Length: 216
Ligand code: ADP
Ligand code: MG
Image 1 (cartoon, rainbow, N blue to C red):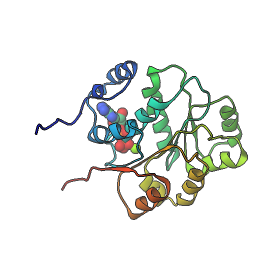
Image 2: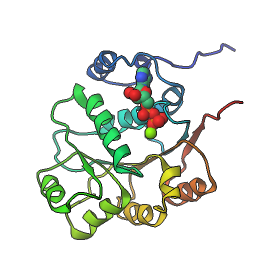
Image 3: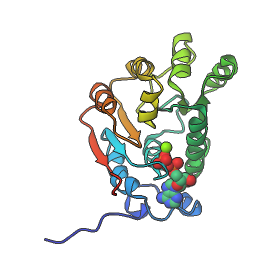
Image 4: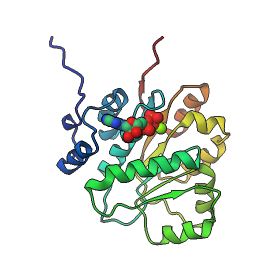
C-alpha cells in the first residue's frame, strides 16, 4: 500500500485557474492544516464541522468553498456567514473580497448591529451575492423583509463557540430555519464545547468532522 501524501498545495484542489493565480498573488501557496483537511470536504459539497485554533486560516477554508459555488451572474444572496461580532464580520468580509478578486463583480455586504438598518436594507435592494453578519441583525432584516434567502446555497456558522458564549443560539436557530433546507452548512470553531454538537445536530446534515486538537 502506498502512502498518499496529504494535499498541501492549493493547486491540488478543484479550483479555477484564476482562483489559484489570485491565491498565489496573495502569497497563499501552501494550505494550512485546516484548509488541507477541510477544503476537499467542503468543495465536495458535504456539511462540515471544522475545529482548529485561532489564526489557522479557517476563513479561507469556508470562503473558497462558498465562492466556488457562487454564480456571479445571478444577483441574489447565495451564501451567508454568521459571525459573533462586527469586528469579526468585517474581517471575514475583507478576506472574502480578497479571495473573490479572481472573479469580477462579486458583491459582499456586512450586516451588523450598531449602525442604522435602513442604509443596509437599501444596499440589499441593489443586490448582493454574499452577506456576512451577526445573527441579531440578520434576523432583523429577515423580519422586515429586506433580506431574501431563497437562493441561498451555503450557510456558514463562523466562530460558533463564541456565538454560543454570547447567547446567540436562539437567533442562529431562527435564521437557520429561514434558510432553504437544500443547502450546505459549514460550522467553524476554535474550540469544541458541548453546544457545538447540539448546533450541528439541529442544523447540519450528515456532517463530516475535522478536528485539529492542540497538542501539549
Ligand atoms: P482563523 O479564522 O482560523 O482564526 P484566519 O482565517 O483569520 O484564521 O487566518 C489567519 C491569517 O492567516 C490571516 O491573516 C490570513 O490571511 C492568513 N492565511 C490564511 N490562509 C493562509 C494560507 N494558506 N497561506 C498564507 N496565509 C494564510
Ligand atoms: Mg476565524
